[in-house]
Amino acid sequence: MQEKLRSFGLTRYEADVYLTLLRIGSGDANLIATTSGVPLGRIYSILSSLQEKKIIHAQETRPRKFAAVDPGTALKYLLESQRFKLQQASLSIGDLAVELERELQGIKPSPQNNQFWTAALGLEETRNIIIEEINQVNTEMCLTVGYPEFFKYLPSRSGVMNETKNALLRALERGVKFRMLIESSIHHPDKHDDETTKNILKYLGKNLECRVTVFASTLFDVIDDDKINLKISSPINKDELFAIVHVRDKNMAAKMKNHFNNLWENAEKLEV
Image (cartoon, rainbow, N blue to C red):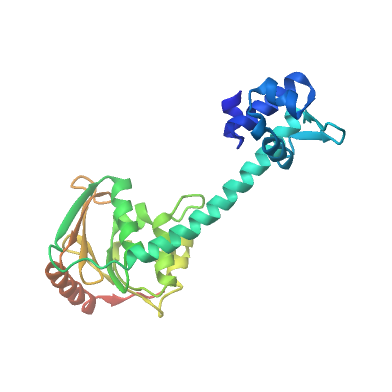
């Protein structure tokens, strides 16, 4: 029981005193100290702390006597106190996370050894890379959007968790420029009526541009002129995104950006 009480914010001595008072009913400081084993030099501060926590009563007599609040009421007070502390801790750690993220984002990588690549397989892992890059983009992201992303990464059904859409909207709201090349085979007028598409297309003409084209090669994204995502569809079903290869390489990103610009120039403007 003592360990469980300590989980509710009591110290070892506080738990000992409360349990002692439950057993003996009431007593003065000397009796409580002797019965609980708490040093007499600590007993008054412990009793004062338990009063502040509202789980013992004091009788103003000479000598002063103390009694335990009934367990149901005591646990209610302790639970409320712990919840308040957790709320305060959550606010504090949230503010700390925002501050730390700002500081960490300010660390610029060294120009040396700046080439890096990683790969991910499967729906969850590939989506995580896409979300991570959307969260980290600073200035511009050039995307090619085909079947896998449109149907698997930007679901429009209500109740579906849509972290990709939310990350995209946050980036648009903070001023990141997006250019999207959309596969013409998924460009249907009725798609403009779903919730996801409407939320995104409201940024058209601001920091979002969309054009329609036909892709003859692997889909890809270019992020801030120094990173790319190569999006590989399943060889069995083109509607499934099989893997992503994420590459950090300025030279390769420049070549892919040039390829994207060529596709962009020959693409048709999205008509809503």
